[in-house]
Image (cartoon, rainbow, N blue to C red; front, side, top):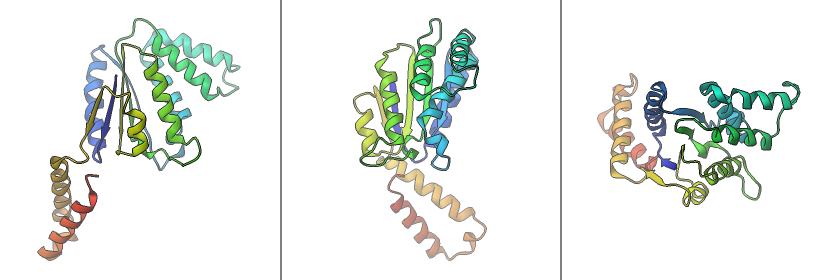
Amino acid sequence: MVFHLCNLFRLSISSSIIQEVKELQDAGLALMAYFYCDFRDSRKQDVRYLVASLLAQLSAKFHPTHNILSELYSKCDNGLLQPDDRKLSEYLEKILKKEGQPPIYIIVDAVDECPSVSGVVSLRDRVLDLVERLVALQLPNLRICLTSRPEADIRASLGSLASHTVSLHDQSGQQSDIADYVSFVVHSDRKMRRWRAEDKNQVIETLSRKADGM
């Protein structure tokens, strides 16, 4: 099951999702692994670090999978060698297929912050390829949630995979929330409070319009 959300205020949305799944996890009803793609950190744009993070989180939360990670460690000369991307993905699949696990939620936030370069296999392409491979496993207990801006390549890749898609980009309520947020910032900022009323209104109107749902 794949959920794809497009929203500028995705941070608050993903935080809400994480909190709800965490409550299930704390009750022993789910496992969760979370990864945030960050354009400011090259490591957080790379599928290698994404897979490694998912491996570490899931193995730490479900003890019967420890032997799987230990096997990978041994095959890499007890940590002297670094596993390649294919090997990491292979062991992630082994952990996901381990029997006896509750529903597993994988949340990947801000996929659009992974660079996309035309004509080459980009970092974003590699993340999307990983998602496609995980979906192809057809594991009944696996839930995947991705958030991103509505980039064309991301929508094209996930369109046929997503069982549920939520897009707030063009909704009037989203536009209203943005306008309210901008207005709050303008009227609460110490320096902006001294501006003339017409200047405040112009800033609010211009920023809300140019945000374009983002």
